[in-house]
Image (cartoon, rainbow, N blue to C red):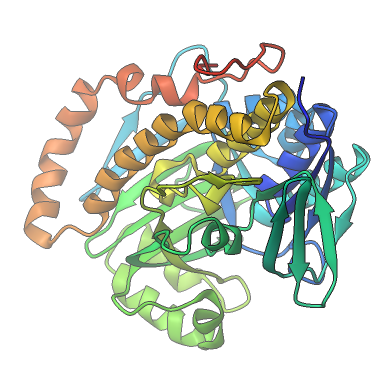
Length: 401
């Protein structure tokens, strides 16, 4: 029988509210502590949830509320050198779901609150004191909180990760900055419920219809100098629009998207990162979930979905294992190989975003044949068909579900 009765969850983005809701479902009293002064509804732009991510949300009853705010993506295309090739999907699986990140935060927050999860804001973690009977978190405002375990869902710049292991690697900058926008009244040829991943003449971008004549597009702008999100947003949007129009100006339809985007529409989403393998996922009564421990690049299409899965699996392990140490060992056994496999696949895709002009031309020639020969089931099947069996007991050394 588990000795875990209470939990502190650090971070109120995506993984935090999901973890807290799952912990309460597991009979563990969880409370979320968020560093920002309120719910981060307006952070970021769009993201895609894969079928496995939505299925994981169904475990805690949040799947339908998220579907209600999402746009299904039933068709995916690859555009290289002006050639558009359809990418086959996996049979008998629901489509990807495109959601606004801020809206996703809101829905997950509200669902957690409805499940009885308390949230506290302006609580930036600075240190912990771990004792035999529990763990106490210390925050910058001088307050403290104590529970049986502490779950670090505090993102790619995780404080909890540093507390677990001061020598842990940090996120690696991919030499790209992210931008997004939704443009109105676009009369070009963009099919409903479609997403196109485009390799332009100088840089990568993606686009898709979001209904009512509106088109969403996102750019991965090559940028060797690292800029934090704050620093990138301090630069006038007119500057970024000038660069985007120059880089994508000769692309079709990327150039038209860039020219039509206004300063009001442009969303600066900041530096793109990937997390290298983290040696220690837990220590004592502390454990990591989501981007704090595994953040594959946006090329994976799995970042948010993996974070949701891990948040639910750590709750399941704490429910079934007698001690936090045993629970965290089982959790890592369940998750490490899966998330690192996705990260490895995404790393290959990242390389293709920064090809030189000669390699890009070769890629354009080879892409149609590559797509035709690609075994989509082998490449994506295990990722997207993954399902969590909440009712199955987790057993030490046998964590496979």
